[in-house]
Image 1 (cartoon, rainbow, N blue to C red):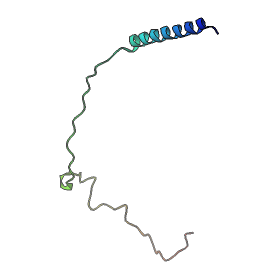
Image 2 (image 1 turned 60 degrees about the vertical axis):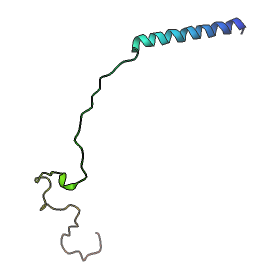
Image 3 (image 1 turned 120 degrees about the vertical axis):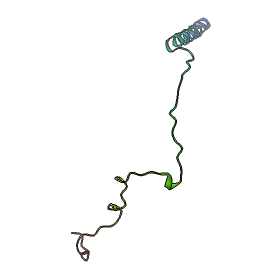
Image 4 (image 1 turned 90 degrees about the horizontal axis):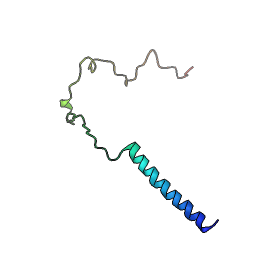
Length: 80
C-alpha cells in the first residue's frame, strides 16, 4: 500500500465517524430532561404493636402448619 492510500482511508474513516455522530444526534436527540416523580410511602416501624393485622387472616385459634401432626400409632419404625 502506498502512503496516499493509507491517508485516504484514514480521512474517509474520520469523515464517516463525524457523519455518523451527526446522524445519531439527529435520530436519538441530544440531552433530554425528564420530569420523574416517585410515590411517597409511609414510614415502616419496627414496633410490633404498630402493625394492624386482619383477624380473618391472622387467627390465633388457627392450625399451626409448623407443628408436627401425628396420625395414629407411631410405634412402627418401618416406612413401608
